[in-house]
Length: 339
Ligand SMILES: C[S@@+](CC[C@H](N)C(=O)[O-])C[C@H]1O[C@@H](n2cnc3c(N)ncnc32)[C@H](O)[C@@H]1O
Image 1 (cartoon, protein in one colour):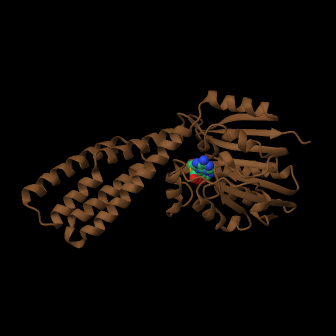
Image 2 (tube, helix red, strand yellow; image 1 turned 30 degrees about the horizontal axis):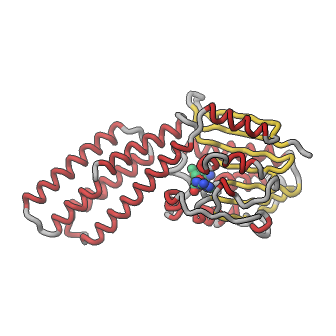
């Protein structure tokens, strides 16, 4: 098995970069590994990875020679990585992987993974991928294409060649990941609305600046009231990444306030500005996930459109929790007949 292609230019017919989606780019610009804040509970991510590996094994068993695969909105290449691992069991297969995501830093992180060493990739909006139509055997995406807005699925699907397939895991409205994102957003909104970071900086600056006792006491009281209200939100929040993030933030602030003389006001201001920016982009990511999630009617309409555009074998399933009690995501497969 080889994983790789000579040049991204093989796939391209134009280039259409865009500069929105800053929240995702910021996330991948940081040191985020895979999608810990992006895919809800780690169990979902692990189970989805296993599901992709088995799906790729089935696809590869039915193919030989060159297989061209696109992971659209790839993030750090979790799905392409599963393809690469599954392909090892098929020595006759020549797997060529193309990775695209709006965030160039995510594509770069994916390309740096040892399992994706021979892949190629570039930054692009999934709704306007500069890739030749009907040129790919497998087009896959996990929680990706739905971010690219109206019409993106049809555009991405048009890249599937005869005999090829589209496989997409899609955010499901009111499912488990949706619920976790809503809960994260509630915690992050509370931090923002209560002005926790600005209150902390005001208090710290007053202490370090030697302001009079009554002013410091007033600021301390306001900070403590905000802290109590955040405490209430955290106590009622489901365990999740944002709750952990907020608890760590509160404990870091407490640590600084316990030893104010150990920190410089300027450093604390810079730190707090960084934390505020993180929280804002985290909020935007959570809100964008909720906005991207699809309900049953939308998914059925999408399946209908794919049928109209020449796909013959279309299946729409719900990926569910282990106990089969709750929905996590949609799994959409659409195949084109061989010529
Ligand atoms: C929830 S993450 C999923 C990443 C990856 N597929 C995974 O499963 O780990 C969503 C991804 O979509 C990307 N994205 C958001 N809007 C996009 C767009 N319009 N075009 C392409 N990628 C986009 C983000 O940068 C992010 O990497």
